[in-house]
Length: 211
Image (cartoon, rainbow, N blue to C red):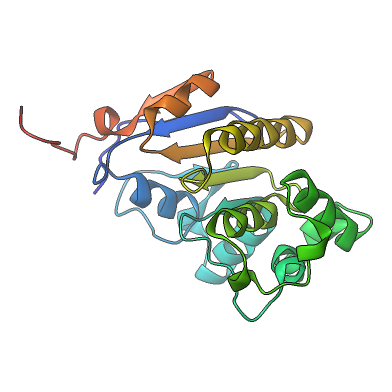
């Protein structure tokens, strides 16, 4: 449950949201993605009221404007690596219009994330957990979405790859003016961000552990 007085994120801002399990991180992300609807109050994403949209329009809005890195990856097991990354282009003409060569755009991000070309035609289930995570990241970034939402995206990465990944995420977001919302229980990652909040303190509905 969430009870937040006010939370404003400026366009182009990179925001780190930290909080322990149960403080409302998943609920907040589901609201921002239009998966769930708020019972009351106002929620605007990219200056659009999600409550005013039909479910179909919310799905279209998410496909056009949001790149989401899910904690559970949500890769399709019957598609290979490259096909998984190309998926957003199938659902969004707007994302397709932002690049000249769809395959090249997908391949470029995969290579930057250290997924070699020899793996492009592999089934995603044949990859390591860390490799699957990077494929999920590439899928979220392809087509330069205006808002990137990352849910615990570094949990399967070692320290070197974690820092390199965050640097790449910042570089991509800055280059395309994307807003980045990065959620993690690991408060050490906050050192990479100029803007951060602790959701457990912001959410008035969260009581936390008794002292």
